[in-house]
Amino acid sequence: DAKTTQPTSMDCAEGRAANLPCNHSTISGNEYVYWYRQIHSQGPQYIIHGLKNNETNEMASLIITEDRKSSTLILPHATLRDTAVYYCIVKVGANNLFFGTGTRLTVIP
Amino acid sequence: DTAVSQTPKYLVTQMGNDKSIKCEQNLGHDTMYWYKQDSKKFLKIMFSYNNKELIINETVPNRFSPKSPDKAHLNLHINSLELGDSAVYFCASSQEGGWGGQYFGPGTRLTVT
Image (cartoon, rainbow over all chains, first blue to last red; front, top):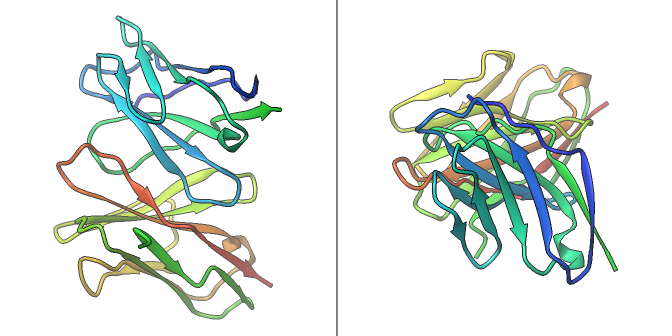
C-alpha cells in the first residue's frame, strides 16, 4: 500500500473552508484516495474517495493533483461538529484500510 | 436503524478471562472487519472476512479469533486476555466489489485489569 503524509494538526475558523492536504507520492495507478474522519469516541466515518478526477459530495470536495501525488480534502464551511481527526488513505479495493496518524482538525468558534 | 452495531459498548474484565464482542450489520454487506485502536489512537486492521476468505493481520495473536454465524454478524473472541489487549475495538463492513467505503460501528472499549 502507498503511504500517506499529513500534517499532525490544523485549526480552522468556523464558517471558513478547511483545506486538509495529503501527500501520497508513491501512489500507483490503480490506487484510490480515501478520506475518513473520526470524531472523538466514535467510529471512523467515510467522507469521500477518488481516483483521478476531482470529486464532490454533500460532505466535502476532493481535489487530486494531475500527477496524483497529492490531494486536498475541502470542507467548504467548517462547523464545530467537523472537529475530528481526518485520515487520508490510499488503497486498492475494499479491504484492509491502513490508517496513519491523520490530521487533527480543530474548528474554532 | 443503526447500520453497524456492537455489543457491549464497554467491557471490563480480568486478565486470563475469555470474552466476546458481538458485531452486526444490517446493510447487506458481504465483508466485515475488526480494527483495534490503542491508547495512542492508532487504528489498526485485525481481520477482514467474507464468505470466501479470512484475512488475518499477521501481527494479531492467535488468542483473537473472529467467528461469523452468518453474513450479518462477525463476532470477536478473545482468549486469555492480557493487559495489552485493553483498547477500543471497532467492527466495520463493506460490499465487496463496491466502491470500497467501510461503515464502522461505535466501538467497544475493552479494559483488562
